[in-house]
Image (cartoon, helix red, strand yellow):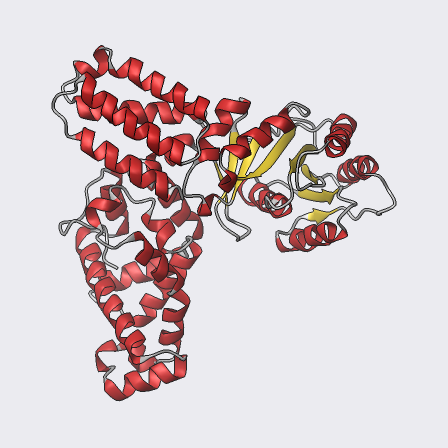
Length: 459
């Protein structure tokens, strides 16, 4: 996420961070680099101008020029202004109304709108303990209705079955009545999308809005469309009183143009971001956490929250107890760790949240992403081993490697690579057990203190 912008800004900030003396020249040089990075990331020109002007005014004032650590002060100023451009703080959903709270979802085709409706339902059920009903008013694309019905089953939400001979407004009204009858806390209504903004679409969704009076009207938009996402959101906001935006496909967005432009152009907060295809890949949008990742400072808060939600606590406690007793970390444990990594979004998702990644990992990002795709292959290799081999990896020699490779459909080189990675993980686990466990390791990350060898773990 935001790899392209992040790399450019991280280099620029690294150059200025250690400066003992800040002059007008190096401030201008730094801001020039930031301006180029933002424009290349498809951030709207007005946003870039406003941001640069804000930073320059503050940088040339006393706060930076007379600071004991002026380089650090300038980095903090850039950090603070990026956060301000994106809204400052997370703005949560407003559900403070007599049930059902009505949420209307708008957006263009291809932005992942229907999938986002289901993701939001899952988030409301699991994080807010709300009962949720889903309804689709898209009478133009019957497949959209069937898609939402299937997804509602997947996320354990109620589904309002509508008739195609009714108008979108009638469907929306009927869905709200049904939600009331079933004492549902929240109803989310999906609307028809178009390939582009048109008058018919806008008139229809405005009628739906007037008929049901939603407490939240959210616009879903593909983050990879850059500043066009902000312009499209503004077009909808001119017709509908939007309460917020959901940015989809953020996991594939290397530029950040949409995230940095939407709040400034529309005045509406980004409330959620879609970070993957899974139904649990929807996160509240925290500007400070996003900026921290962009500037290469990681996001340990999100990492810890993700770990608490998705890691099997019983399995983690069993492993901790095993290591505490001095027993070896084996391939059964390694396979469990691979599965835990998959639940947390894979290796790349974990590494991008760790502070100072560039300082303690020489592994190129492309290689990390490639390794991320190899997790299933590694698991297949371990599954092809006998229980004895998984418990005692040191016995895996020539003939055993050949059998394991054949059984998993891999090459002997793949088996050797897995064993090498396992040995690195085993060494890391020994370090963790000596240091007092994972909790202490995460505490070190929070303080930006890497381990003695300069890395949080080896891979």
